[in-house]
Image (tube, rainbow, N blue to C red; front, top):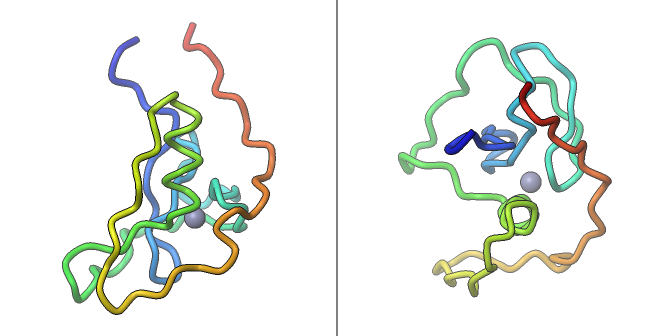
Length: 99
Ligand SMILES: [Zn+2]
């Protein structure tokens, strides 16, 4: 099916991380960058900036999983680069084809 994404964004500890779209509230899972998360039942609080900054590792992993070219990350003023941008990713679960 077109338009079905394998992942979705989940704000967690100040960043937007990508999690498998199949996870529902209270599920335990992992973000694409390897953090263990429990999907909150309630929507997370809004960021004071209106939008949570995206986790770079998750963004890159998501793009790679969907075969989207990874563009150079725009530099945000005042934000420091994570030193370990190339953290090894855990083996992400393979999304099952919808029957
Ligand atoms: Zn992440």
